[in-house]
Amino acid sequence: MGLIWWQSYMAIFALCAFKTTCLDTFIAAVYEHAVIIHPEHLRPFSQEEALNLMNKNMDILEQAIISAAKQGAHIIVTPEYGISGFISNRLKIYPFLEDVPHPMVNWTPCTDHNRFGNTPVQGRLSCMARNNSIYVVANMVDRKTCDPTVSKCPSNGYYQYNTNVVYDSEGKLVARYYKEDQFDTPFETELVTFDTTFGKFGILTGFDILFHDPAVTLVEKLKVDTIVLPVAWMNNLPYLYPTAFHAAWAMGMRVNLLVANIHNTVSQMTGSGIYAPDSPKVYYMDMNSENGTLLLSQLDSHPKLSPPVNWSSYANSIEPFSTEQEEFKASILFDKFTFKELINDTGNYTVCQNTLCCYLSYKMSEKRTDEVYVLGAFDGLHIAEGEYYIQICTLLKCLTTMLETCGRPVENASTVFDMFSLSGTFDSQHVFPEMLLSGLQIAPGEFEVLNDGRIVNENGTSGPVLMVTLFGRQYEKNKPTNASIDLGSALLMRIITMVFVLYSSIW
Ligand SMILES: *[C@@H]1O[C@H](CO)[C@@H](O)[C@H](O)[C@H]1NC(C)=O
Ligand SMILES: *[C@@H]1O[C@H](CO)[C@@H](O)[C@H](O)[C@H]1NC(C)=O
Ligand SMILES: *[C@@H]1O[C@H](CO)[C@@H](O)[C@H](O)[C@H]1NC(C)=O
Ligand SMILES: *[C@@H]1O[C@H](CO)[C@@H](O)[C@H](O)[C@H]1NC(C)=O
Ligand SMILES: *[C@@H]1O[C@H](CO)[C@@H](O)[C@H](O)[C@H]1NC(C)=O
Ligand SMILES: *[C@@H]1O[C@H](CO)[C@@H](O)[C@H](O)[C@H]1NC(C)=O
Ligand SMILES: *[C@@H]1O[C@H](CO)[C@@H](O)[C@H](O)[C@H]1NC(C)=O
Ligand SMILES: *[C@@H]1O[C@H](CO)[C@@H](O)[C@H](O)[C@H]1NC(C)=O
Image (tube, rainbow, N blue to C red; front, side, top):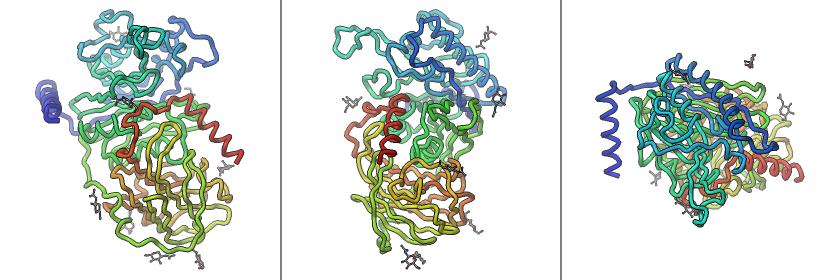
């Protein structure tokens, strides 16, 4: 650790001493891109057709980059698959690949075109950064030749990596990051950072954010100030809904987070934002339009942090509430939660599962007969879209008044809460506090997280409540310590969700 610390200290020192003074704040931009897609049912493209499609997507990204730069942005993040369109098939992605060298080669593709063969995508991205004096984060697919007789080498003789690239404001390649599992898995989990005059950055892609390595290590060991996260993230209600989960992760991890999602309503992908640890700054989700959107916000280069929360302190200090109320089981994203229905307009509830006990005190403005709310607890191994241990306490609106619909996706509600306080006996110190109001709105400033681990609202919610959740990740208990069994490809996620919807409707 000493060496890494020293290196990054020297890097920051060098950047700030010789280029310009360090900035206390900077302007971040993320672009939710309505990406043009190669229809999956078509035959594979020729290289020329692939480049045509990528240029069409880059034409759109270029307009966003020019607009962000004109508004003073220092960095812009664009989505996963934002250039190629999402393609889950190794064969079909092949004509889209370019060889992306390691940044240590010190390369500015804009001014040095042919140094690594034919690299039109990298050349263009580098020029967009250079011509507009802005850092550009983009996602593409890298290929690396290998010997097909060697056991791990794919039969076509190429490793193919879902890859983020970062160009600095002079167009130099400063970072290259391989996603954990799409299309091939890197030999080692990559910890990729880059230093700027506006703080230290770390890079992840999509569902990598759910795992200890690289996500938690970037924040806690390598001490990055800001994470950039290109995603192709579906509307995974309730607690993996993109804006709510990303806002909660920034808050729980105490780091700035810049998320650019694809905009594709058919695949239910929308939800991008700029999130600071104290509050979301700007965010966007819209299922009713087909347009992309540019978001900008000022952020602290080194976010000011309040003292860390002890997530179990309150819940461990009190006796379980003795409310007589029958428990029942229902599934959220395949996980069997233990629930209790909130019968009255006010109450104090405890629900436990394994070692986790969840505590809720609440008051609704009225108890409606056409809506059911529950308190739920889950403590165990989550198995859909990757396997990982979670502990969750959740206050949730059920889809209908039938209890078996609790946990199914629901998008609107009518019940306003006058107050709530939710907490749990979490083992983990990695807990992400989430809230969604009717219409899938996150609610900045409508809840507080107290030092003793309670998420509270004292003065009433501004709208009806869909969900209040404490999402705990038990990284210590993870069997795979990396994301290698993450199945988070867009297509697979879609199939799982479809199966889930089917499964829910059968039951
Ligand atoms: C960048 O500027 C150069 C020189 O002015 C120009 O040739 C090139 O087309 C520009 N590229 C982009 C992507 O803006
Ligand atoms: C990731 O996890 C898999 C499965 O446990 C293991 O085989 C692989 O070696 C791990 N990779 C790294 C980089 O730790
Ligand atoms: C979407 O973009 C089109 C074309 O640029 C524009 O005409 C339309 O007003 C936009 N719609 C919304 C809802 O912003
Ligand atoms: C959290 O608080 C409990 C009791 O209030 C204490 O036993 C525990 O050590 C604290 N945990 C941390 C990580 O500080
Ligand atoms: C609900 O209110 C009724 C009437 O005041 C009371 O008898 C009952 O115990 C309450 N139930 C719960 C679960 O709080
Ligand atoms: C819930 O607990 C609080 C404080 O412990 C108490 O003031 C309140 O009356 C309780 N509410 C109900 C409905 O039991
Ligand atoms: C609420 O959601 C349900 C189910 O999705 C839908 O039928 C209903 O029209 C929605 N109500 C409003 C007010 O949007
Ligand atoms: C709730 O209202 C009181 C009185 O107006 C105020 O002092 C307090 O700061 C408010 N709490 C929150 C979390 O806004």
